[in-house]
Image 1 (cartoon, rainbow, N blue to C red):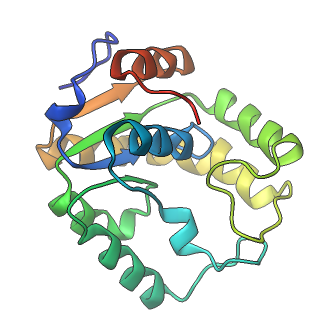
Image 2: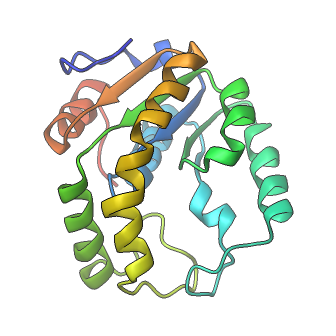
Length: 184
């Protein structure tokens, strides 16, 4: 169910366990919380499971993250946002649907600068953490993620799960409207 024409499947078509994929700074965290509030499925932010709280985004040990991830996907319902391709296979086995936020790199990079500099306490921020502009993140958004886009697309399509594809920030706004979501 590719919604490239902005006619998105209804929430019930995606079921109670929704994976939200897409590039960094595309609005996945806010969308997960909006889905949580509208549908009553818990929002799960993989970045918060992957990184230790009260740090400057320091990752947990891989096995600890995997344990937290697997505990989270065991739930009966969730709107789980984040990619983490190493753990994607088991997530997709539990998922009932996908929302793919497929926004372009320039907008994502702009949002990274804006949120890092001006949006303290934003949704998806690390508890007790400190956001700062990092070359590693700029490189990830500008160069790494665009190269991985086709891998993500292949994984989504190979999953056989119903999905909604959101191809721009304007389409993301339409998605909110069509699903009756409110930005937190």
